[in-house]
Image (tube, rainbow, N blue to C red; front, side, top):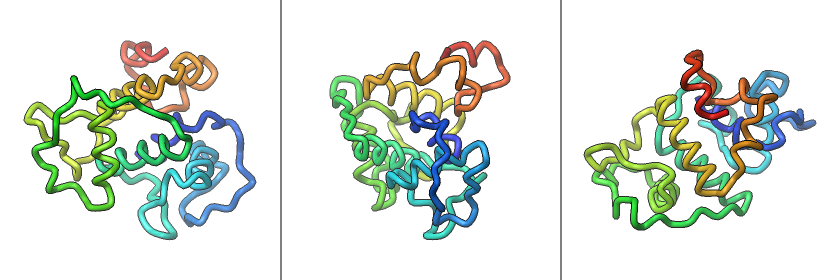
Length: 173
């Protein structure tokens, strides 16, 4: 799912980078190619190993938090802390991988990713499509990105929020 998640983050997704990926499982001519090349080039993603991106594998909530944090940092986008509406900490903070602690704290403070009904982050759980959609809408609002620019009619079918359920698809147009 990470290959789908980097696509809406790449405002230049129509550009095919003349770039050779270090990941052996990335084909720059596939639907995800230019977005992954962009994300790799800007060090938004590191892949699952030095030589594999992990095409087709699911993404954990802590991996998604890290991807968002790097994106915001690399592009110098600011998201305002939302202290009134976020938990002081997650109940399962001790389960967050060391490499993801800073990123998870960032998405918690800004309200981009919230905890579950029990106040837990669930760092090792895979993100669902519904969670990904909610997280990215919060990300766009937190970064004050123009959703109409990102989700115009010409590219809406290419991005992670696409669904076969027309009622959900229409939410983001």
